[in-house]
Length: 334
Image (cartoon, rainbow, N blue to C red):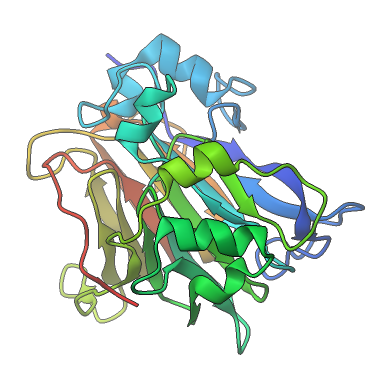
């Protein structure tokens, strides 16, 4: 029988030159002396904050527990498959690209980095740069980088709270200021910086340009309307994205609801819950209840089978997992 239980994760705050000392509205009570760009929630070095495994990293527990933690849908038995993080851009990020799986394997990495961005908050005018404009070639883009005008060749999109953006490996991309993003991605940090507005940071043009795709399935995800949970008018599920590497749903709940770590395919996955607003308790058989609130993440190991989320008044949270059945890339628009 598994000795695992729901893990409350300790966030790792990562300084970035484009970040901010004010992480409101997610962490309004945290004060920082340096600019923080990211809050890592399920990185391999992120630590468990509760229970007998407190202080252990996800990497250590994945090595020890294997499929009991990550589930049978995960690509590797001893590596946690998904990294979730908050992003707090106060300035433009560098223009960058991540390799897809095939490109990653040529440099000795097990997988690439496809990701998605849920827009938790956005000020008026917040934008992202996503992909090259139609007809732009890699050669033209590289020339524009050398001429310090790479921004002109990107698709710039206004973003609004509640949107989900899919960013396939090989897509040139950047974030502008004014939003708070929840990123779900393959567990990889392979990033090639292509252009940085003259900031004195290293560029990776040779490897980066080799990874760039002139067109990809990236864009704003087209989603169905939200549905009620158990016929309740007070609790709803919104299917945000289902893709080859992750499935992410949004839940707005006032009533308790039971979830399963095994999907219709018969395969199981760890589930990651990230609170956007409100507070709830995660309950699983034989485990101590775990309370999580805005900015917190809870990892529910696959071996637990079933768990219940019980709102404390109301809660809005994302739930991410690895789909058991092979999924196509989502339908998107620019």
